[in-house]
Length: 101
Image (cartoon, rainbow, N blue to C red; front, side, top):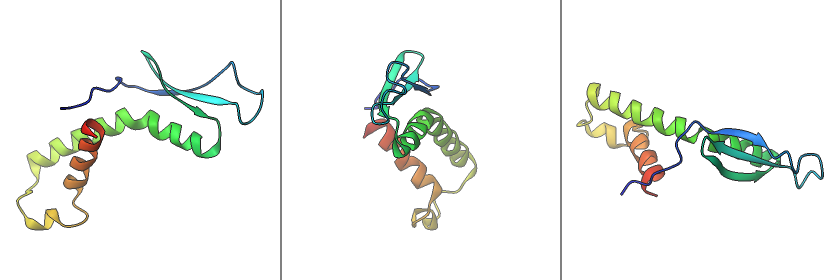
């Protein structure tokens, strides 16, 4: 069963209530039109995490598009496609991880 996620686009916003009070208390939100998707502290690693999380809906859509194009134009019956580095296999695994866990 596919998991439904909050529709994109997602964006990163500062938490105005906590900004500037203390470096460990500055937060950022990943938001969608429907509200906050998640909260992260405003630290270097969390800033990078927030960017990756905010890009997730776009990345998933791009993988699905590329998989569809490849399935129409590629020959996936060749056993070499199932070796390490198979782009279609990697895309399919990432899509499954995002949608089913």
